[in-house]
Length: 349
Image (cartoon, rainbow, N blue to C red):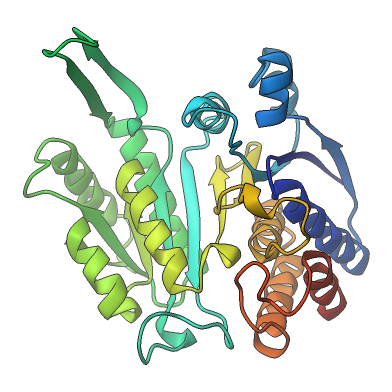
């Protein structure tokens, strides 16, 4: 029995979550485990209705679950930053979800904008530090609203936070990947304080993992090589901001946001799983949004919970549907409705 908190969210989030739960229930039936789900009304509609974003009572309850399944957050009538900082970042910080895990995998039958690249060329994982860096909220304004205004946003990097992220990446390389190659993504030639810490910690921790091959690249070079030679990468580890940027590039080369799933992790504690695309409000209620990212996030959740066979079976089912059924991954162009895509994955499973 696994207790799952479900946050459908805004826009097309509830439609994506519906299909993710459909596939989760099919997997539970096949692999003989049970799911207990509790839905939470968090997001733009609640904020507009009550002014609440993440009540303390709800946060306390969320800590008692095995995992959180999130749809998408973002409402056209709520100013940018309010929900992102008040809900998404608060969940990451308050639950100490210090790892953001983003697989970048091209499935057979899915188009990539990269010329002559095949599924065997695009199969890597980004491990992003998720609770420090520029997202820690350190900084402020001086003389705001005047011609002499100053805005400061500081990147916070602690040895503790950096090292636990690096250790997760090394362990992931060792236990989950065949190539066992780990690349540190940074900017040591300009950000000489933050990434001096990252690089020193990286090579110190590496001594404990002689079976893992290590290298380093600047973030701008990483972006170039993700386009030119994505096959070079196995696992990339990086800070919060750089991880945010390169994972969106990763989503594009694997076929788009419609198939990009992610996890916010604290090993051994409640963790959160989500499609990384936005709420896509213009498609709300049309039953045309691609649910595969949410279904992929559901598979990542099962893997985290120890149901590895079920997780792999969902991934295989998604790959089969991409290869044999879908015309496109774009909303409204799949050849099937949102619900029908969920049915196809559940049936393949």
